[in-house]
Length: 460
Ligand code: NAD
Ligand code: UDX
Image (cartoon, rainbow, N blue to C red; front, side, top):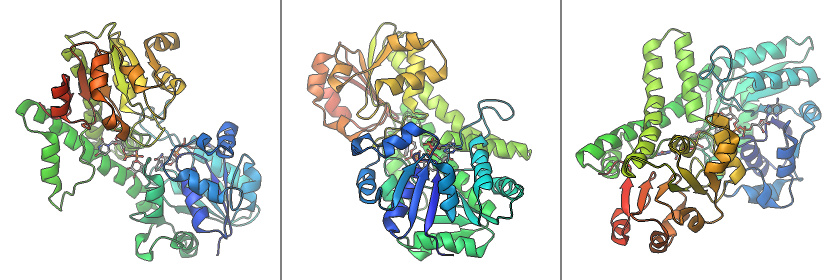
């Protein structure tokens, strides 16, 4: 079937950029992205492109090119489902916060709601595509809901997980390493493959069974996160032995079997995917009674938590065992550079540890607002919103955040942090002035020559 009308449910970090690129590369297809969140849809429709709800390099240009031509953002979910031949489910699948599997399993309630919505509205045959990251065998549940609504509509369910990374989403979508399509019906698979074939070379479009596709997504994220925890584990050993973790990473990364990517030691990985998907993998393994498998992957998360805690402890220990009443300037709050997303950012947890020790924190992040920072901390429920509001605030400029600070903590690797006038910053800070570089982006010798006491990850 040649697709001419697509609906995507979920206008988030995946739905927005993914559909924008599909629309750009398939001008003959009408693409409607729908969401229950009116504010988000209004932001996507904003004439001021700097107000789009998601910051991604290159995204605004594509939205400008396609919006209201063949790309539409709307809250009219039912009519978009009705008109579409293919429906992508791209809603959030967070870790459950209640009931069975609390803190581990993926919460599939939003996905189930979408399936029920599609089943109720559909009047003709539809291809339903799982774009959200889902536990292996979810397609079975979706198919069961779709098929048991009493209508005579035929549904084909495909798994088409998304591998984009935030901050590079548009490039990842324009030049994907691979596109993965899992399904039972060869015809349905080819309908989706055709859409991608508008710009993705045929040999990069993989077809598998549904379960392999679902499990490949969780596995890819687990392997990527595992590399970071592996190098972060070595970083602690480096700090004891005077080895340098960046030198070790370079040396091992030149082995073509290991490869150089994803070996940057840091304050710990964040983002909405790695922790959630590994916890889900661990939960699935436990549910099949595969304890050794579950324990193996859980260690990736345990090490990541240890790395964040260790970074905060190091700040406290170095500042003469107390940060009470001391100003700590945070550079960066987003979980990585080039995004305004803060979900599971290491900065949140490091701030929380330091606030427990009564530190005062000033944050500068080029893309994150004061309200977002407060919301992230309030979500942890460690202290009252008023207390958070008193102890931590966002600064408009880096100099404001660092003026009279006892220490700088670099939490995100934004490029602009390396271009600052660090001499001027040094002069404005309390002495001795400390830098804790959680991303290893500054030059140790240069900082020490200015007068800073400089600590990075994985270097003595
Ligand atoms: P998000 O929270 O940014 O967006 C999800 C959107 O779905 C929200 O705007 C929400 O309002 C909407 N929604 C929820 N239930 C709905 C319903 N019943 N009807 C209509 N709209 C509904 O999430 P995201 O980051 O885009 O992630 C979506 C999925 O993609 C998740 O499963 C995630 O694991 C996966 N994924 C995310 C990334 C990433 O980098 N963010 C990458 C690959 C895969
Ligand atoms: C990840 C996967 O990369 C992507 O394929 C998937 O679709 C969604 O999850 P994302 O979380 O957006 O993407 O960003 P990613 O670049 O993977 O970074 C995740 C975290 O790991 C960030 O906090 C980043 O700073 C950290 N990281 C990454 C490191 O600490 N070291 C590295 O070498 C790489």
